[in-house]
Each structure stands twice: as C-alpha cells, then as structure tokens.
Length: 202
Image 1: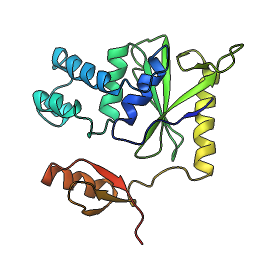
Image 2: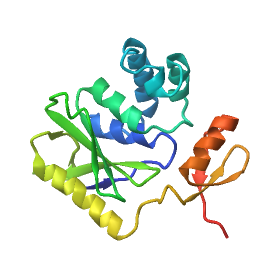
Image 3: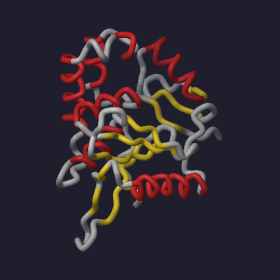
Image 4: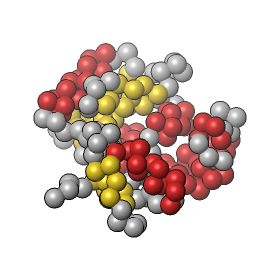
C-alpha cells in the first residue's frame, strides 16, 4: 500500500475520499461530496446537531459547501454514514488509525492518511491488473490495516508530518502570522477568515 497524493488545498479530505470511492479514481469529486454532506446533515440533524457541529445546522451547511473550508473528524464521520463504509484516517505522527463507522457493521473500508493538516488517499496495486489500484478493502482485511499503518510508520520515520501545536501558519486573507492550530482557530473565530497556509519563518 502507498500514498496517493492529492492537491494541497482546503478540499484534500473530500478529494482523497472521492478518489477512493470512485470507480475511475476521479480527483474532481470534492465539490459533489461537500454538497452531499450538507444534504445528509439536513436529513440527520438529530445526530449532527448544533452541539456536534459547533454551529447551527444551516450555518454549517453553508460553511461546508465552501471550497476554502477544511474537512476533519466530523466530515470523516458524516462521509462514513453517507457512503456506507468505514473511513479510516491514519495519523502519521502517532500511527493511530482513527476509524469512523467502526460500530456500524460495514463490510468495506477506505483509508486516508493525515499529516496534521493534509489528507491523502491510500491505495494498493491491484493484483493482475497493470496500472490499476485497489482503494476499497474488506473490513476483515487485517493485512490492509497493517499496510496502512506501515505507510504511516515510513512517513513518520522521514518526518513527513506537521506538529500542529507549533507549526507556523499565514492567514491568506489578512497575512497575519499564527502559531499552531489553537491560534488559527481563535483567529478564524474572531475574523471569520479560514484560508491558511503553512510557512517557515525566516
């Protein structure tokens, strides 16, 4: 199994999941998945309520359909429900697989890998099919889980992850320098600016 890199934009989670679930492995499904998440929320507001979402449901729906807004754990859980499969996000820094939908009895799962701020898809070369890849696995396939954790281990050894407590960000709206996710979240709450990029101080 290996990492399939998707564009480093604010839609990386949706792009990675779309790549995994699409038969043609399209890299252009982020907008469609965002819309489907918003629609799913409207029909399941008792589960995904204001407390869970951190904002009123209607506000969340408008927010998540915007291409500049990041997806994370809540969106992994919604996508799992929406698509009827486990979404396993493997954290490079800790090696921990975060399983969304594991209590639903789903027969299939996909893997994405998380470096602290960015998601990529995980895939495995398909047996007997040159150039083809496998992205949907049985939940009984423990070898796939080991392989996914192995990818995280290799990437961790080469320090391909972001220390989200101490990394530096630039707000791309007002050019304010920020340190760590706590400052970024506070800045977003204060200004409604949500478009950030990592940078290195000189």
